Image 1 (cartoon, rainbow, N blue to C red):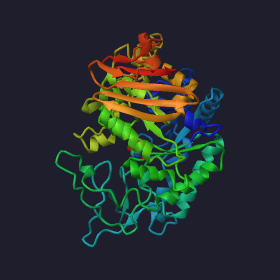
Image 2: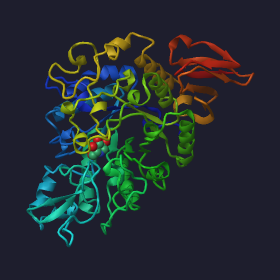
Image 3: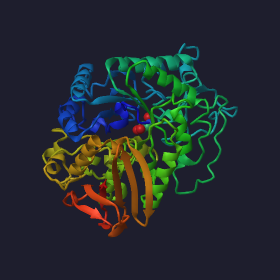
Image 4: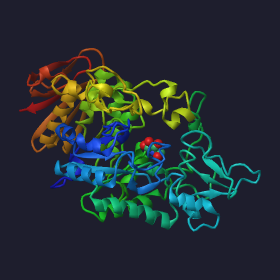
Length: 532
Ligand code: NOJ
């Protein structure tokens, strides 16, 4: 969809900030809103169009903010409502939108709604959550499992019933079939939209509805010893239920009450099910998050196939998007190595669709290895040994080589991933060969050449370790050539083609003229401007 005037969320770059880890302004070791505000110049200089903030609402922090106890108030650890409003205003003055994280599937068990619901079986809010009598044998109502380990039913002794929690027992699931629950969350959305936020990233959108009949989930035939016990069952009665689309439509209608806002859904689903969340009439999520790059094996042919499959699956008029990392998955530099992380950045920033960049990936922050004593993530504690722990990708942003990488003057809540001074904003800012400089050149080029953001996408080839595709718009054409391997490889262009290297992972090559065959070095990526 290239409309006459593309929406900001189509042409722009989204940057995810995990507020605990970006910048601490008060020395308590936890990042905060004032800290983010202090770093807006950096984000503007990088070329960010929107910041998605992971939750900064009042929370007991059992799941570091994804357990919300008050949707309309800022947790004091992160600051005050005034701090938030100042951040919003300062960001707006720089042309940067703030996207909030909406966590509608569950609340904290400390939320007033749950406190009221659990106070008695006759509480007016009882039906706001999912309660069930024990099975006839006194056990749990069915076999549903928590994503965070163990059964998904917790027993409430005071009222002699179980409640459902897809995540921690301290995160009871709301009952999205109850119209009052929906109305309450839609009012939360209006509260923030009215303040001027750019939209929402909706947490675990595919989880909202559960089977009314509470049928057992079937065994996962692909499960084997060595796989996480959380994957033993196929969650067909607990996720992605057919009537989800009517809920997404309602959410979209709330967002559409305001001008120019965006609805993004967190959805870990296969592509054909993911794209349903655009809505049959494109009346669902603007951007159902596409995590294909996070989950893909890092091989040219695999990537070529998944890009083609995704491009083919996005409905006509729907807008694609790509995500390379987030606060739940190992960092890109850890997944593919620092050399390939550069190639990955070029891929992310030259594919058709909205890119989402995870804080710190622009300087190649590594996936941290933490000791057992340092682990903070409840998933690591509940399901140890399967590499599911998420602390390693949540370590503090590395600004400079001062104490704690310039993140805090206190004790950081998680250790700094590396003391390598080269992996800091300060060291990379002045180095044209740095990862940060590469990101800036790519983002800037993308902004100045709509062919790279909004333009058509044409897959060309995946041969050995080489991935080739073309972008074009309004007479401009770019060829992107990526070497996903550690050895040199030649690429042959048609004899008549003339090109100039616009962006290279190693900047010395920029400006070089290309005709006929050219060579890609190990881990090298080039954006070639085709000249006739
Ligand atoms: C998805 C979030 O990204 C993750 O961090 C969180 O733990 C779960 N949802 C539960 O809210």
